[in-house]
Length: 225
Length: 194
Image 1: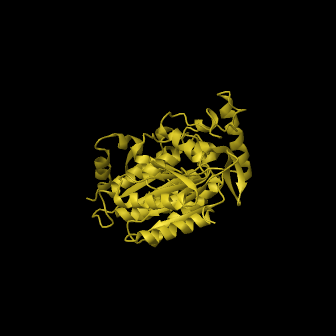
Image 2 (image 1 turned 45 degrees about the vertical axis):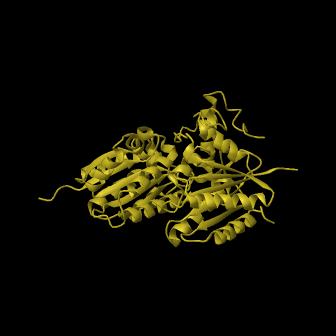
Image 3 (image 1 turned 30 degrees about the horizontal axis):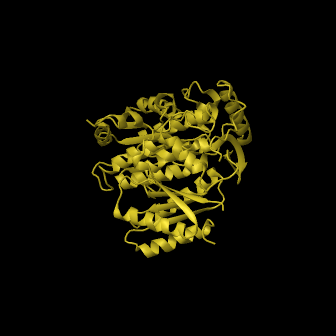
């Protein structure tokens, strides 16, 4: 009897359970499970703090058919802890390692344009190549910061493209294929017009600063000489 | 006379004869053009990971809430005229050691979005911006990684709102003289050498 397929879901956000990355993977997980794919979730920050964290993630990788990383865009690439995890994995695997799971990257950012996540996806593709993962594709989610740590269900219209994209991804993986073009197309759609996104975001910074009484100090230049 | 300051952020995990030789030649090129250079070896500093809290934008604007060397590195970046990111090219990008410091430096930009070059980016916090050079070391001849690194420098320059930036790649087996020649071309591009 063939065993069920398994997916390792890696949350690459330092915000862990309160992140958009986790929200995406949690939603995806439900649909993977519905398609009979078993799942395991790992958090990058937690595994880096464990003395045997990398060995355990390698063991999980060896036990998985799919490795799915969700991470936010930091300075045009992935957060440093995710890069460190990748460096450590690259210390233990090569391009010709025996077990080669499919690797998928879901990158979300605060910029409204999905294409700003493209380079981070290319970075993930290069990582996959170096460590002997089959590249399954990437999903660039612009404006993902609007999810703000809520579940995709709670996020309502802010996740109206992300939800079906994750559903399509789950189905495609269950069929043994990688990221479908339709999922990329959906998740790349702006949630609202970009100029409006920028306006809403800027107002949000002001209201967040008001909570600290700092809304008139946003332009501070503490390191000006 | 106005002092022109360069800052080199060393993102290597180990100090080697090669990295020292490169840092020496960079020092020599800059000093001969009247610049001062400070080298910061990031591996020797205690820099926590960015928590993604955005408090450097809304609670303590311009300053990270984590009180460690990450703050000092950001201050040095802001107060430099030229910043050199010296890193092993890692999957086409920066090492985690360099990236940790860069993640923590987003307090140097302002939270507000504005449109530039047809895209939305954060606006500048400071009136003066620094020029920067991405100096990447490839461990193997890999044009794809070199191209990705070049693209990364370009995207970073757009986000930093910096006008002058350049790329210099060090290939395996390259002689120091060739490395110096390529780096001097980068200095020419950013206006250090006129």
